[in-house]
Length: 505
Ligand code: NAD
Image (tube, rainbow, N blue to C red; front, side, top):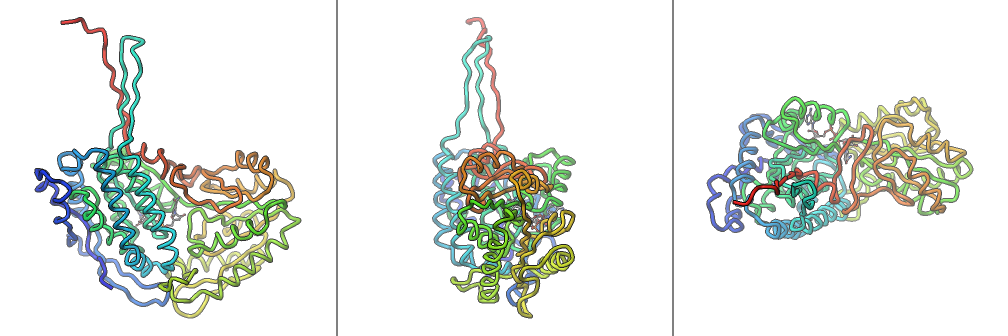
């Protein structure tokens, strides 16, 4: 497979700013460039440990400066600065269609270093990403302001304006979704964007660059760079980047916030980790609860930020419920090891050896602080496959109950009363998502108002929706992706006050 390994930085914006036909000019300026930095990223396939490449470029300081300069020129002087909302919408619609046409190749490039089955990437991530681009295309020509009648001698106007050069830094577990969440609203609002994918999943993002150019986004408007911690840190500290949207761990989120504060007080959105609860009451629609808790959790082998990894089950149904989850886990375990490039394969390995070792350490700790109901071991001798693992009644202070594992390890505790369930649900420093399974809608709404989380799903796993804000509270971060909330987070409000008491000339 032809791998995109170089940086998608387009520094031709200045030369093209005078071109009278912005849409056609961009197609010829597709550009992968060599990095000035000599460092390289190596990748292996976590399904079989095979070597993929050791040649993915790493963006260093000079490369990032080049990308930022191109973005700034595109934003302030290039054709993009004059695009109407309708033109921006047209480009967003077009890139959505082009991504759909290229879905198979994109999915393969994303799957190769992450081990995610292509079925999930095509039918969930890419489908969702395309919908996100179409959703924000709808907003691009509907950005409104406000005005207030003169009641104190001033007529007042509130205008929403794009911020300028924005950037995104993301984790590896669903790169395409994060491109959609960050890039689409930023472009709908009229900004220029630089996206850094994780060093564990750089290929799919790099392959997107030319598709944006083909869709008519002028040079410098959308750029894709790769690199790890240092590259991310350079972005977070850059003085000319005015907003960064970050998806990743709380540990790194704090570093991003510090770097933003130290450099230029850039705006920051933090989409961080979680240890989300699922509350299962005895009156729950049982098939739905079992499927949502067991099957939902195993999507992407538990490597999902909103995965409900702490299950709270009413004591009187706990045995029956856990038996059903064990069955789901053991069936999934049998399918593991199959070719993840086969569209029928549902479950894959965890992303790499580092993540594998981290999860296995949690499992060993769990064996000492909880009852192991199923799993707890490796599958096969090649790759990073881990058996879906279920622990019952971990102690409140055990790492498997308190810390985000980000792998196929589910913990269950039982409760007797609603109050106890709520207390257990809130017994975490995170607050991303939560699920409530019950047939009593009054209880569902009552409990949802007491759960400390940015999102609550009733009788379903929590999944992002295009039009509702997605984001966490507590140490799951702040700010939102999706919905109008995200669009506004890529804009500055400007208040204009007009003195109406000027004497007539
Ligand atoms: P991570 O925090 O280690 O890395 C995320 C990104 O930050 C990567 O691109 C990495 O290169 C970069 N980075 C690392 N150190 C940096 C630094 N000092 N400065 C700037 N950038 C730096 O996270 P990960 O292992 O890639 O992803 C797993 C984590 O992400 C989990 O905690 C998971 O819950 C979280 N996550 C959150 C969401 C959400 O929407 N809330 C979604 C997916 C994943």
